[in-house]
Length: 231
Image 1 (cartoon, rainbow, N blue to C red):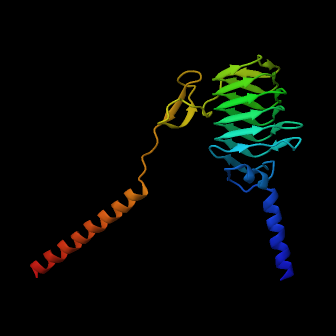
Image 2 (cartoon, rainbow, N blue to C red):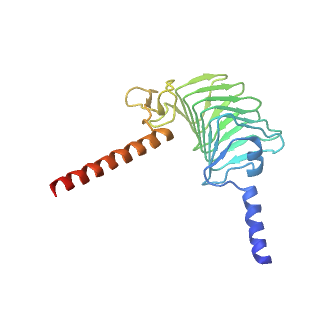
Image 3 (spheres, helix red, strand yellow):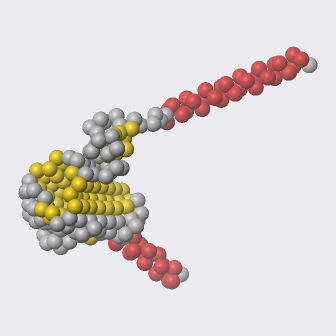
């Protein structure tokens, strides 16, 4: 029994300090409980309206995938964020102590950077289809592509500056489309969205079920009547 309790305690402790795959963060308390890094293989989604604040940890290493649909604000007291895996920002992403892009950062929404420079390391990629507001330098040693709006100092480069590749997430400005992506075969930086597939509401499914039941009962009744008539 004691051994079982020890195992359960260990599992609970592990769950407190590590992310589960496909975690959705909806409030600050969840981020604090889950930890301050995203391990490789994990995906964390910040839900609409969530504000992620951190003023004590000297740096954050995002090795997995972070998808931001809300407001992600990192007010760091020391080092900034190391984007080792992938970050896709659809909302507002605020960084005040630097952003080190080792993997990939796709900015579809608004990226605000103050305080310290953004560095795209060798092999790193920054693709912008939204808006980047930076009051500091962006040093490109990897790959930088811009199809959006860029304000601030020019990107200094020892790497590659080009267009955003096909399939990169973007926003075509139409609220009635989903899964917007860059389609560079039409023209550089062309953002194409698709109309969402119509879905049926819960009440619609209930009404459909009742209707099918009624039709089925009428068909059975009609079949029984025809059978008795022949007999």
